[in-house]
Image (cartoon, rainbow, N blue to C red; front, side):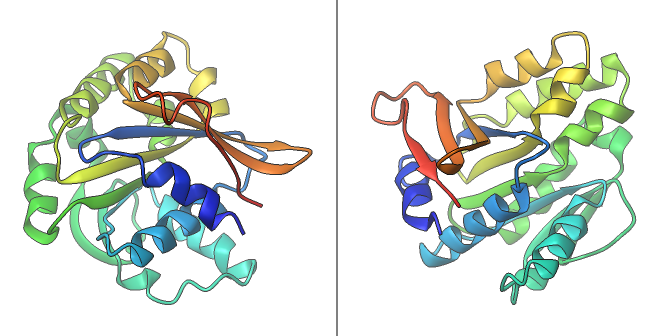
Length: 212
C-alpha cells in the first residue's frame, strides 16, 4: 500500500517546510494521514498533531471502521484548536479566536514537547474557512506564513480542496502561495494518487505516488 511511493516524496521534504496537501471530498484522507504517521514512526521522526475542531477523532473513527492498525495513535501528542473531544495526548488547547490572532501560545506549547524535527499533520484546517470572518481568516493565514522556515518541524496541512474553493476572497490562493510545497491527492484509474504540483526543487516537481 503506497508506503514506498510516499517515502519518495517525504524523504525530499526539508525541515521548516509548510506543505499543503489538497484532497477532494471523494478521496480517503484518513488513509494518507495513517501513512504519514507510519512513515514518521519508521524513520524515527516525532509526530505532533494539530486537531482543528475535532477532526482527529473523526479520522480515527474512519480508520477503525476500515480495520487499520491505529495502536499507539491514542498516545500521539495533540494540540487542540477548538472542538470538545480530547483524543490523543492533549498537550495544549487553543480556542479558535485565539488561534486566528496569535500563534505565540501555540509555539510555546509544541516547543516544550518536541525534540528533533517533528512531522506535524494539521487536520481540519479547512473547517476554519467556514467559521472565521474574512479578517480573522486573513490573520490566520498570515500567522501560518510566520511559521514557514521554523526548522524544528515539517508542517503538513491536510485540507479539503472543495471547502477551500467554496470560500470567496482568494484565501485558498494565499494559502497555496505561502506553502513551500503543494501536493494533490485525488482518484484516478490507477488508484488514489499523491502528486507534487508546487515545489522550488526540481527533483520533486512532478513526482507522484500511487497510494492505494
